[in-house]
Length: 391
Ligand SMILES: Cc1ncc(COP(=O)(O)O)c(C=O)c1O
Image 1 (spheres, rainbow, N blue to C red):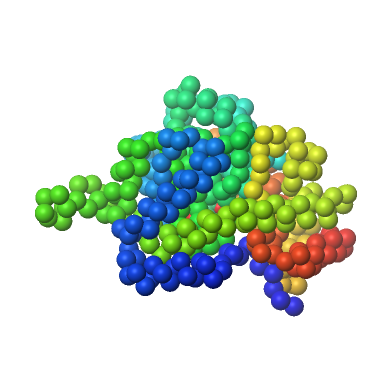
Image 2: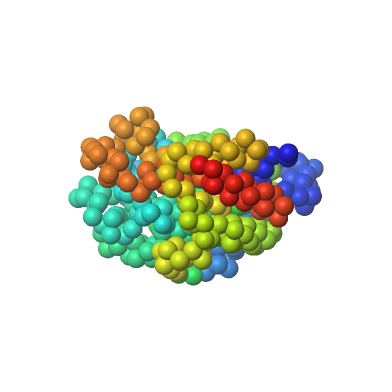
């Protein structure tokens, strides 16, 4: 049987032509005008979704590098305390570790997979300077606008990790654009791909200008010499990736429609199955938790009863060539992260972060490529129904 991948890029002849045309042109470096053209097109899409007209952006080699450069330029001292969700993909926190910041973990809500405003508020200490919020799987933190207001009132910097949630709206605004800084990923499995790439968005044009300058080794030619005026990086997006991004952006609405159709298909198939809890805004408990959210369903997520059943279902699907993935482990599961956690985040982790642990133990991601065919989705559904009957 043909394998069914978890989440593949949807590439077509237009994408091939776009990259080929840049190659033929020969200007393929990060200095080529096509990189700025991609930034302009991306920004236009965010504005069309209701983002602030003052927003700017800088494209980078990855989402990780967008966050890293942002933190480098914020120049907060080592040991700076950051409130951070107890679980996400590790790339959400690695740049904080590069900067030697200290993370105070906050458990996530069991239905939205982001901390609530109240849990951030009770975790805050006099040391807290930064708040990280992550929007996982195309979902969102529903109280985002209030979170921004609270951060402003408390003098905290709000950073949004919207790597997985391009196209998700909260109260009519795109996630990633509400915080002081937000970033997206265009990694190969994301809703819009540039093979690898990312972008930082913000209204802080001073920081964005520095990012653009320093992401290409901080080169200055004004004296007629090749002069450098700051620590530089080589982290700017290049022209080949940007041309793919411009081409992909034209089909973004179609990708988002397809993702929603796939999610609806899984929801219809699994509703009424007592042992399966599919994360969807039409599923009553989620409907309430997702008030104000328009999800983009990057990766579909199914909860089963317990860890053993999740592992059994995962094994059964994989044995049939269906690629599924367990949900991320909480950050406390990784020893190398421990030295960067405040003392309190290492205590009684299973009860303190019980929702993050339950999400990992019971959650499984199902195939979600935008071009997943009806036939392939029907096969996944049949195998899930079959697999959950036996275990
Ligand atoms: C939640 C989250 N944060 C950050 C990243 C990092 O993005 P990138 O892979 O583009 O560096 C990813 C994706 O890979 C992600 O899923």
